[in-house]
Each structure stands twice: as C-alpha cells, then as structure tokens.
Image (cartoon, rainbow, N blue to C red; front, side, top):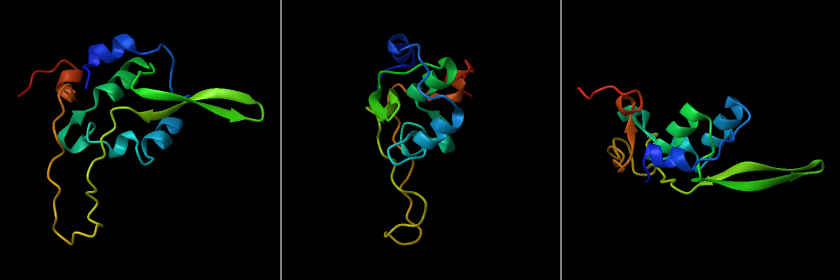
Length: 123
C-alpha cells in the first residue's frame, strides 16, 4: 500500500461524497471501509487512503470512479477501493462456534496510527 504522502500527491482535488451520510452509507456496505483490515479502530490502525480523504477532502486514485445515470443525467460516484482487504467476521455470530477469536488484523506496510496522523510520538 502506498504512503499517506503518495496517496495525497495523486488524489484529485474533488470531494468524493457530498456529505457525511453519503460516505457512511458507502463505508458501511459490504466492501466498504468499515469491514476492511486496513482500518481497525480497536488497534488504532488507520487506513492511509481514508486518512487522506478525511484530512484533505480529496478523491484518491484507489477509490474507483463509476458513472451513475439517472433520467436527469449522469454523475460520477465512488465505486470500489482497489486496496480493500476484507476483515474476518468477528461479530461472534458465525459458524465456527462460540469463543473463536480471529486474532488481530494484519499490519499493512504504510498504515498510519493516530500518533502518525497527528504527529505524536509513540509511547
């Protein structure tokens, strides 16, 4: 995965979503940010792609574009993320039985922590 600075340098200066609700609907769908191993709130490991979007309001090249057509015309919307990596299901409601723990998500080269994002030194 590319670094924060590399992603920012190639991103289009265009907002990918018109508002936060539109983003939340996209991120919460299967294949969205909230089920990706690259963004893990429990370990405070944040996806550099999402970090660029949040801090700079740009459209990264990793978020594919697709055309949405309506009777009134068409416009671009965010498609899939080329770096999406599905997180194992850890909601406890699976067929493996009780007590199974998928373990921590993998650490991906280039991922940021909150300390990295805000320039804080690691403890």
